[in-house]
Amino acid sequence: MAEKPYKTSNELFRGALILSIAGIIVKVLSAAYRIPYQNIAGDIGFYIYQQVYPFYGVAFTLSTLGFPVVISKLIAERESSKNNFAVKDILVTSFVVLSSIGIMMFAALFLGADWIAGWMKDPNLASLLRITAYSYLLMPISSVLRGYFQGINDMIPTASSQVAEQCIRVLTILVLSTIFVYQGYSHYVVGKGAVFGSITGGITGLVLLIVFVILKEEWKLFLRMNIKPVNFIKISKVLVFQGLAFCITGLILILFQFVDSLHLYSLLRDTGMGEKEAKEWKGVYDRGQPLLQLGTVVANSFALALVPVISGFVKKKSEQELLNKIKLALRVSTTIGLAAAIGLLVTIKPVNQMLFTDAKGTITLAIFSLSILFTSIIMAEAAVLQSLGYSFVPVIITIIGVGSKWALNLVLVPHYKTAGAASATVLAFMIMTALFYTVLRVHIKKTLIERKYLLIILKSTVYMGTAVLIFNALFQLMFSGESRMLATIQALIGVGIGAAVFVMTAIRAGLFGEEELSLIPAGSKLKRFIITNRSIRDE
Image 1 (tube, rainbow, N blue to C red):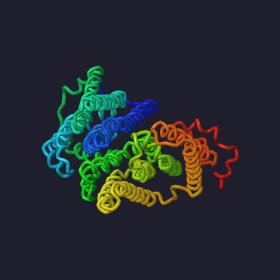
Image 2 (cartoon, rainbow, N blue to C red; image 1 turned 120 degrees about the vertical axis):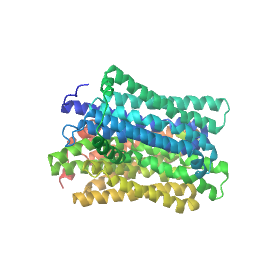
Image 3 (cartoon, rainbow, N blue to C red; image 1 turned 60 degrees about the horizontal axis):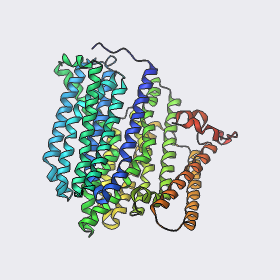
Image 4 (spheres, helix red, strand yellow; image 1 turned 60 degrees about the vertical axis):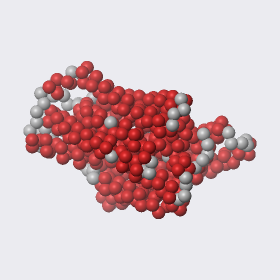
């Protein structure tokens, strides 16, 4: 194929928008399906699925975030790069390197399934791990094709393949689990049906990418592949090291789930719990994962959209504009994170019963909900650091965070069980948030979150929490009983009241200006709440 022409800024923006929308859809699907799955499979069935999920999550993140981003970057910057790699050099190297990685990870997971399941203290998980292993064989070619299309700024194939993959995966999980539960199969057979969704979804995404290659006649490029050994080594280094750096923020939540998968069940058994009870409580604890993911969707999407904006100001060397955008990013992430965390905290009991059939583990989930604040800030901080060129700092801080989570589990779970595990998660995220902020503060040497804005955020949060708590008290006086229908009504109204109070209080107090609101998704609709007297912003 001929070299692709240079894309205009409008085309680049359109491509980024398409990919961002697809990313939001994928994240929502990835979190939301777990709620009906828990309803279908129960807490033990949910425990089984969540034990294996992190292994698939790594494969999916590598094939959508990590390696495709690096491949697309190499292709898009090939003309300005001093190495001046040809597209075929990049594609051949990427396919060979990623195939090697994929095969090694497949072999490690497939052949080591019994050992890993033994480490988890649940040998029955081995067969589920072997099914998951096949995801790593689909990863290499999916990554290469997505990276290629993104590199020539054709985002439709990548976006559509990601959405299709998740849709088919979710459909497979819900349909097979429903059938298997109805037929009376064991929890582990139901889990196999759910895990099989990763294979059907992965194949769907790959087939769709291949269809785009054929329709767009990109297959002609793959007919004349050869590469110089020197280029192979250079591209391989960039692919492996930068691939890890780019996907690390997407892996943070998954790595924390990994820690809990590997030893939380065994730690619960060590406290004296029986096998069934420990599995149930691990499943109850895992209810927090979809809540955390859904709570951070907006902040994570904003963080991803932030990278090219900040990178642009870095290249222009516009220090004041750069500082303003960094401040805005941290202000938005703090606002969204605190509002979501406290909003969930004060409505957690009815929300728990509404989504997961009962109110079991409410205290654990209340603690866990605080993670939303810190993960929202972490996403923004990591995105800013990557935009400034500090690609490997997030890797180091993530390693420290995961290590902290592991150590805190060992200390807290024996005493406080699942509440201890939730506390360990919150504390580890707090450590990561502080480390990210310290690095940013050292680099920028200026205040990143001004005191007056923090006061507005805190005041709005207090008003929101108070309003919801008053509503909860009145609701309990008016309606007695613990039915799921009543819990649903209470949760939905409570969330609506909390959101309305917070937004109106924060916007009217001057937390964001009109121009700043225009940069936030759906922010233009909030401009009408801004009061005329804006003296607070001029203090």
